[in-house]
Image (cartoon, rainbow, N blue to C red; front, side):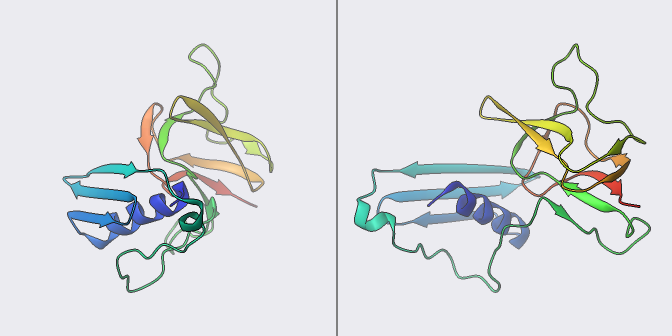
Amino acid sequence: MDIREIQNLIKFVAKSGATEVKLEMDDVKITIKTGSGDTETVIQQMAMPTAMANMPVAAAPASAPVTAAPAVAEPAADDNSKYITVKSPIIGTFYRKPSPDKPVFVEVGSTISSGDVLCVIEAMKLFNEIESEVSGKIVKVLIDDSSPVEFDQPLFLVDPS
């Protein structure tokens, strides 16, 4: 089971409203507990034989398949419907600056183009630069600096016009 499948499973459990899910396969045990806004995940994995590594993994039955969302998606229809939402591609800690003594990557009103660095997200002591996939103008920063972010959580609103 790779990290994307685990992230999708966590996201599915959080949306389903279940408080606890345990998944045990031959050499992988996953427990996901949710409640009061916190999500706790415990993963134990033993060495997997190479014959088992290529076999598909069947998870708990779902009413709809869980798929990874792109890093940029259109928001729900409301007053922000003309804006593009830039979402977090990973779980981690959101930082607007490359380091504490440097200026922020982008401000509200900044003009950005595809490939510009918008922020960094720290995950497991690695700082991942999050680049824009669209060109436009930053309308709103949706997350406070040094805040934890979840997979697919909205970070910025961008006006593409």
